[in-house]
Amino acid sequence: MKKVYNQKEVSRLIGISESQIRYWDKIGLIPHVERKRGLLFFDFKGLVSFRTIKELLSKGVSLRSIRKSMEKFKRIFSDTGQSLRESCISIHGSQIIMGKDSLKFTSDGQLLIDFNIDAVPPIPLPVDLTEGFFFQALEFEQKGDLHKARIKYEAVLSQRPDYVDALVNIGNIEHRMGHKKTAEQYYRKALRINPDHVEANYNLANVLEEKDDLENAVLFYKKAIHEDPEFADAHFNLARVLESQGEKEEAREHWLYYLRLDPNSKWAEHVKTLLGL
Image (cartoon, rainbow, N blue to C red; front, side):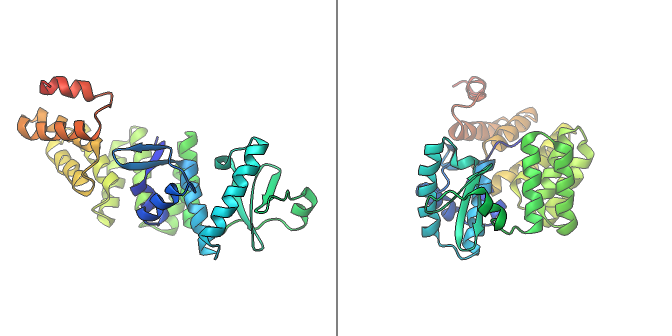
């Protein structure tokens, strides 16, 4: 189950540029939870925050207003012991409302009294139906409920049959359930739509390797690396398959690249021993 998403994945899933992601992180709007090999990583709540801020901007709220509101909310939630990352955001008229459970505050720090909320409830940010299903599916995956996640991904595909990430994620679920043939079908369908999709290429290579179709597994590992040269796990797996085929020199290149990318991984010492380093 995916725990964190790097800036490239966030860019693809949310539809914002990597420069925006880096800038919003830099100004503290959505801080990263991990930095590795030059990439920023965000958890699921961060992913939802990116989507929310994108929606606020699409409704005409300026980034400056969002930042000012966030700064005030941080102070408020610091006083109440609540986490900004666990809060939700909505729009009430022209105001940004943030809260959790029964506590809701305006951007000027005023607590919204319950009867005011009942009288004029905040309007939830509009979300594209397909995108909404997709994020619900991701949330079910985070909770480990693969059955409900799959249903939501299917709902996405009923609206947009070419939604590549939904196809790949269903493939991942099928693979985890041991349905390798079905998983392969989903990965191949995704690649017919987008041959350059990194995860689809990598995961299809995994399935082909498990089927002992090593020649084609190598091709798809190489394609994943071509699209993302810093994909450490793809270098590791490719090197392992090449080694098994007797392609020791080419394997060595990818082992070394893997060590440069992820020198502190749990497999690093094993690779160093294998290479005699």
